[in-house]
Image 1 (tube, helix red, strand yellow):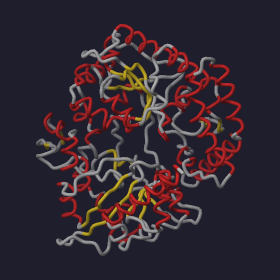
Image 2 (cartoon, one colour):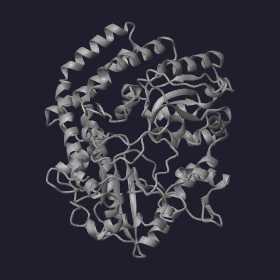
Image 3 (cartoon, helix red, strand yellow):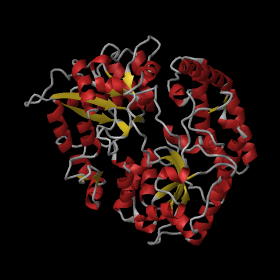
Image 4 (cartoon, rainbow, N blue to C red):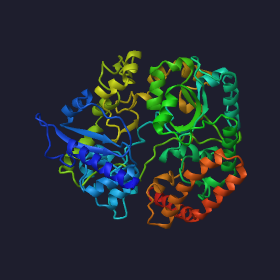
Length: 554
């Protein structure tokens, strides 16, 4: 009954959205000034910009096109995509995230192969090998992964990935110690909280919280992979020498990690609401400055909670977060941060069969990758959002940084087209970076004082320096881009789905258990019933295939 009601609500919502945005009417729908108006749906949550957004209008004037973007609200990606498929009508552009395979299987996407040579900026976006890796089982390419592509020199300053994060006030109080192991991390948080149980206004600290809602439960479950010194393959460990695939869920480190969480839950350090809180509640806690530490991906919290902390002046209390190079033992080299881009072959920007102007849609994507348009998207308007010195170097004043972090200003003025293809790395002008966060001087100047003081204490200039940078993993990497394509139509996909369900149900029980050993035993019994061997055998085949395929391009 509950599910039927949800589907009915989704149908109503999507139908309404279609009426408002004109799904599939890209060719015929133009404004009075001749600007083509396309539609897009991205199956991820994100705030919408205003219809009269200033930079969106400027891009429209330069490209002759604009896109009305809508985002996921109140449902999973699979549910939203399923509803669109049931209706049979789609927006012009679509990114299904976890529902991308559903769109492909439903025949909802346009094959892009025959078009690519006509759009040089899109064609340049990937190498021949990378384009080939995007081919589906029918031999065609249907989507363009948007993120992590590096133009020229890599200039990473942010750590956009996962880490054990901690507030600068905790490190400052302890005299900026070296914190390298899981035990050291929790010991520091415990000691700080014992001496400083509240914020300056008397609000109680939350020593450690965990985000577990829906797909974000990676904040709980995948740390053992990193603690053992492996990169983020997401679904398994791959030995860099033998290429053997193994399971990170059952290692001695996994047991030690969850046992530690269990101990700290009993000690009162782990937030009692961790396993029931929503993402919005989690972000509200981080934004309040109360949370001393957590595991998360930078992109999952920094652009909302980070801006909120800064806007509220909580950085002056040391509430900003920095990453620490945590492993299970000191002798392990961490791989929280790796060099190089990552092609997520499982999803990306696609054009739907409802789009009546495929060439126009692709031209718009191609135009968005022109350097002047790219600068507008990510730097903004010269003189308003950034300044240029006599040597051509881009920078921002404090006032500019403040306004670019303001929610209302972002909605009315800034337009990044954030789920369209975009570059990292070096600007084509040979001077600047593609994005402000990668411009070393601008990045450092934009940091809050508490983070600058912390970096200086550790001899770091960036978040990456706090962790250290490793070489790009091997040609198999990342395996999550394969496991993300699983469906329950295969034995491997069925095992993967069941494993996810069991972990969702049992890992919170393990953390909260009075008797850890007994709870872990119960969890492992259910885990083995999922037949993880089917999943791991299939991953091994895929890792071997990727390595062999890469040899062809050497």
